[in-house]
Length: 459
Image (cartoon, rainbow, N blue to C red; front, side, top):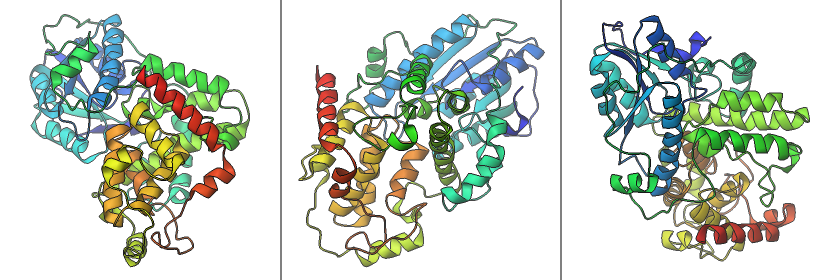
């Protein structure tokens, strides 16, 4: 049963006579554990119609490059195979996702779509809802608790959103909501053709003509199967001790779910249920669910209700004011973007983190905080630092260009945080330094591990 609080009508049109039910897949890039797909199958079965799944593959997604497209198309390969097993036709067409959806909706009785929170994602769905000639229904299944059920405003911090999420959390992860039902009428050969071949991912990426200056990585492979395998590995081997050990950069005691959640290769409710039911200490499970649900969905709240989420002006007034007062402070080091990208700073720990990011598309969460804080310290102005950090984040991270990207970069400049002891350059924004890293963590071991990862990518 799909909770009705996940479902929203996007227009006032009704279901009409049509040749099929269309599920316009965009955010939830998975064929299993997908409530939007399940709703579309149910609606198609009730109307004795086949179901078609359509995907719009734009070649100019903001800030995306060959690294991101390779991971995404690996996931779409997985979708293709799993849908075919269920007798469901999958049509992938190049073009703006809203234009592709509208073209595929031409003979549809009903359009079901998933939910996105970024500005352009909302605009795509609004255009489809306005121009489609049938009902358009949205299913929100890439958060555990629907964003607007939690709050109707931009929340101040984790402490303000946490009780609102916890009020609903257990209801939404009580049991699997999906059924992965087969359609009554197979639609694999319904006659709607893709215009790109996903069988050869490198060739498909090359055919799109996307920016190929950032190479794909070996460290991660896209797809629901890969996501579930990594989740099992984490829960079996690294969840124990997570509450205390998650901040140690050298151990990577993390689930590595963020790229898969970003592309919708796995549902967060599925991850949350597995985490809650895993063996081990309650403290470790609680710490993981805090990161997965409260912290991640605070980011979704931020981009949903802050119209300027990708701009320096989105920072809280106190943070902008304190940074303004210290903008002219002397900086011991100032680095241009090419020096940062080359990991050519005086700080060996920062350089190691940057090398991990550039070569593998990932960075330990604690090092991400340190990484952005140092860019603030080493840039000529706080505004320049914000732009540089966000651009590099979105360029190299597999999970970049995400609600978490915008909220986490802004956090390093004061968002969702409080004022701290005033100091040069940072003002009252939270400060981090290399001495703190060395005192708390085994940074020599971290640098050795990064060297090994980079060497593996270069083979």
